[in-house]
Picture: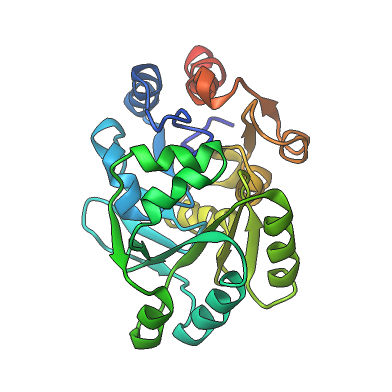
Length: 274
């Protein structure tokens, strides 16, 4: 059955580790769209973090915050939204605050973090350290706990980067036993969202809304938070930089993100077969 929709993760998948979306990848996306195949992002990022790339990617919809919400990028409509309650947000924060970590909270389709967090990135492992050199659209708060105490609206997701693997593993072990969606997303990062938030479920919902069958969807990803969409899609693609647990569930394993593996997947699995 012909593919009608491609959903791709961003970090570790569509873009290089230096945050660049290459001309090759842009061309491959535009070429499949010219063939009538729809393209969307299915990312752990927020809308504000992703819109840096919108000029390069022709899209009508995208899925954000690990399946927490879907936006119509043409109208701004948000037809699908599964956030974390303000009460649960404080519980999650207090668990994370026990560790040496950087906490990023998505809310209102933005990212909130503490003042000085970008400079703090320099203490952390290489992937996180690179964020210190990039101009990211964050909103800074002097105290995230006080920010959550005052906030009456829900939040969308917690993304937390740890100083080392041991601390990330310990935090994951605590959080996974609580009623939240907890995913390990590599680079010593653990993400928490609404228990119903899931990249695969959000992709299923959007496919049905667009009248596209499971067998007509390709999903491309690299990490634990991509597992459900890779398993759901008719064609699941894992990047060469994926852990073995993700490679073994995929239909295809392609070159790494720094080798334009996502572009390779579009070129070899879609464009050359049409």
